[in-house]
Amino acid sequence: MLKSLNKTLLGAALIGVSLAPHAFAETTLNALFMAQAAYSEADVRAMTDAFAKANPDIKVNLEFVPYEGLHDKTVLAQGSGGGYDVVLFDVIWPAEYATNKVLVDVSSRITDEMKKGVLPGAWTTVQYDGKYYGMPWILDTKYLFYNKEILEKAGIKAPPKTWDELAEQAKTIKDKGLLATPIAWSWSQAEAAICDYTTLVSAYGGDFLKDGKPAFQSGGGLDALKYMVASYTSGLTNPNSKEFLEEDVRKVFQNGDAAFALNWTYMYNMANDPKDSKVAGKVGVVPAPGVAGKSEASAVNGSMGLGITSASKHPDEAWKYITFMTSQATQNAYAKLSLPIWATSYEDPTVTKGQEELISAAKVGLAAMYPRPTTPKYQELSTALQQAIQESLLGQATPEDALKSAAENSGL
Image 1 (cartoon, rainbow, N blue to C red):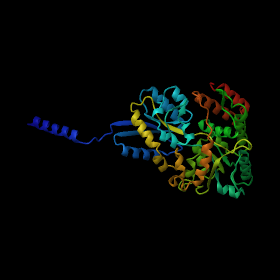
Image 2: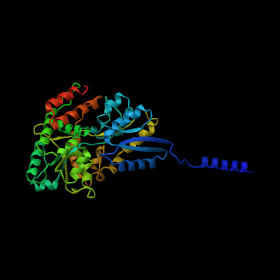
Image 3: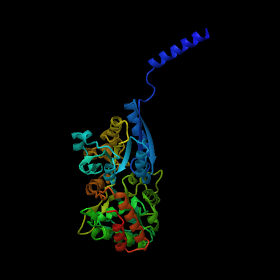
Image 4: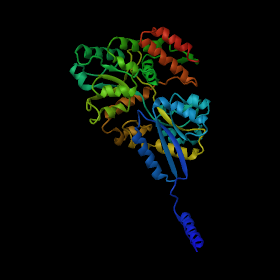
């Protein structure tokens, strides 16, 4: 009797299982993102939730790491044979990732509509050797942020248009006793310093490489480092800048302790948030300055893309997720900490409203974006340059000697 009852219950349970709708996702994707700058973690989670609602058969596991861990996490996961389906990657990595087969070539998946709709500068983020290795997602450059109230108190009518003017204005602010060190930079021995350096290289019309060989040790590359050292030793730059990353710069600026700061798009709305910032409503933003006779403005290409790893067993579902995350509808809905890759978004009031000043700066800055060098050996080159910048700032070597050593240690 008990056996037959058990059989009946088991049969009913199995029927129940077969009739029940699938309560689980058929495909699980693992995606790696960064936990700083650009879209916030909350934004990425909200976008992913919207994707899950539209695609109930696909589940996405999200992992967030600091920018500094993004490259190594991606590469190490490949070697372990598991890891991620979708990864966020910096504009400086496609050469290495393509050469070492970390990312899948998605050229055949890029539609004409995508090619026409996305800003031309954004495509450089995901291309190498004529092929596409993902979709651009974060379109970003560094801007010059300034504290309107401090400039007004100093009698300064307009923000600087050249880097020399920036130094003059900072000196006026310092001399009037408004701030002891008016400028904040992210010059820690990290990629952050290379982004600031690249912005200045672009202003001085320099080259990183010529015919595949280092060229930064003379001309605009040398002028850029000399400017950094002069700003640091003049006492106009916050001395802690040599240890600052972008988040440190944001905190110093938000606290009212900097009149000028170079930083990414995301700082505009964060520094204007009265809940967290002492300078809300006083934040000005313009394109990074130029150099008289050489440039009107300067900008580094700090964009990032989303790609499919070669280890992924679900490339079609991964691509579906990427196209959702990079779509114009998704990007326009989250355009406060990162600006869209789509050209027509900049005429859309949902994107521009309340951040007209940022959009105006973006139209100039995004058009002037200067690339860090495209080479599979980028990591070695960046490490050598980071060291050269630190040594020069600390007075351990002249800019000439430091850059000469960097060229020799760049692996090129």
